[in-house]
Amino acid sequence: MKLRRFLVTIFSIIVVIVFVFIIHRHTSLNRVYLHGIDHPPIAFSENDNLFIYKDFFAISGQSLNFYNNRGQQIDMPFDFVDEFNQSFTITDMTSNYILINSRFIY
Image 1 (cartoon, one colour):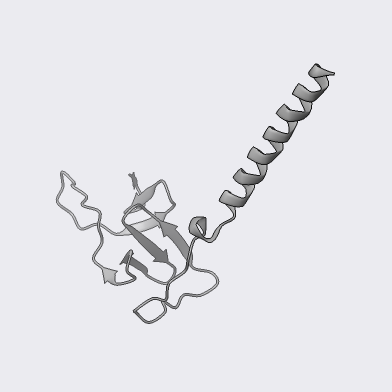
Image 2 (cartoon, rainbow, N blue to C red):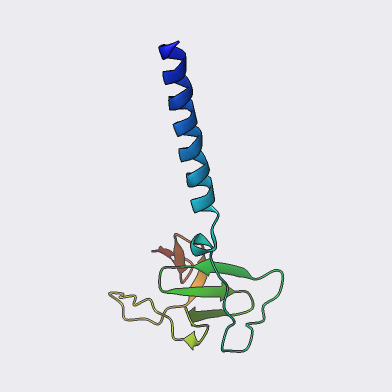
């Protein structure tokens, strides 16, 4: 009889802990809230690609544009150095690699 009472008590305590955990996880304190942006929306077509980096993001399509986390357009954040001192153009880009002048991969 004591064993049964002990098991019921342990089970009840576990159920209470689970309910407290569930209620805590679903309170409004743990929810993510969306805030409005203070800049005009950035328009891009369905065929454009969006690349997200740590401090900025890029949209490539007809042209390649870089934006900071506030949505403001910025200059290209990459600094490429070449032994021939030639100008660089980004030929293609993924979230991990950039193809420069159709022959250099960074």
